[in-house]
Image (cartoon, rainbow, N blue to C red):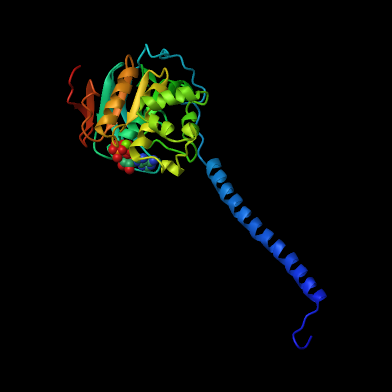
Length: 300
Ligand SMILES: Nc1ncnc2c1ncn2[C@@H]1O[C@H](COP(=O)(O)OP(=O)(O)OP(=O)(O)O)[C@@H](O)[C@H]1O
Ligand SMILES: [Mg+2]
C-alpha cells in the first residue's frame, strides 16, 4: 500500500463510491436547471396575473343601455364620432385634447399625422382599450362606454400597428383569432394577403415555425400576417393602423385588392404617418399639431 499499490477490492470499492457520487451530483445539476426553468415560468405567470383587468362594462356599473344599439352585419356600416375627445395615458401628459371629427358610415377615412400625433391612440380608444377622459366617442350615435366591450369589439375589425407574432407555428398564430378555422380557410386567408408561399414552400406547411416574435419572417411578412382583412368577418368597421408601412408596391396592391373585396358597405378608418395611400380615403383628417382637422378631401 505504502508503495502506491491498490488491491482489486479497493479499486472496485473506489469506482463504486465514485459512481454513487457522480450520479446524485448529475441529478442535482439537472434539478437546479429545472428549478431555474420553473422560476422563469413562475415569473411569467406572475406578470400575467398582474396585468390589469378591464373595468366594468359601463360608466356607473349599473347603467342601463337604452340608446339605439347599432345593428349587426356588413350591410350596416357604422359611423364613428369623436366629440371633443380628450385623453392622456395613466400618469402621462395629455395626448389628445378636444379632438372632434366624424367618420361617416361606409366611408374610407384616413387619419394622417406625424409620429406621436395620437393616431394609434385614437384607434385604441375606439376599441376601448382605454377610456376617454373627456368628451365622448360614439359608434352610430351610441357612446362606446354604453356598449358592452364584447359587443363593441364584435363590430370592429382591428389590424394593429405592431401585430404581435408568438413563437410557435404559423397555424397556431393564425388560430389565435379564429380558433375554429380549418386549414383550408387558413390557407385562403394567407393567399389573400400574399403569404401563401409561407405554407407551400415549407415541408411542414402551416406547421412551419415562425420563431420568437416572428423572427423567421421578414418585416413585411410579419405585417401582412396581421392584415387578414377577410378574417374580419362581419365587422362593419375596419380599423387599420399603418397597414402599408413595410410593404412593397406589389404587396400594397395585394392589400388594396383584399380591402376592396371586403370593404364594401363597411366603414374603413386607416392611420398613416405619411399621406394616405391614393386608394384609401374618401376623406382624411390630419393632425396639424394644433388639433385634428379635415385634410385633402377628395369627395364628400
Ligand atoms: N402605452 C402608452 N403609454 C404612455 N404613453 C403612450 C403610450 N402609447 C403612446 N403613448 C404616447 O402617446 C402619444 C401618441 O402616441 P400614438 O402611438 O398614438 O402616436 P401615433 O400617431 O400612432 O404615432 P406613430 O405614427 O409613431 O405610430 C405619444 O406621445 C406616445 O409617446
Ligand atoms: Mg401609431
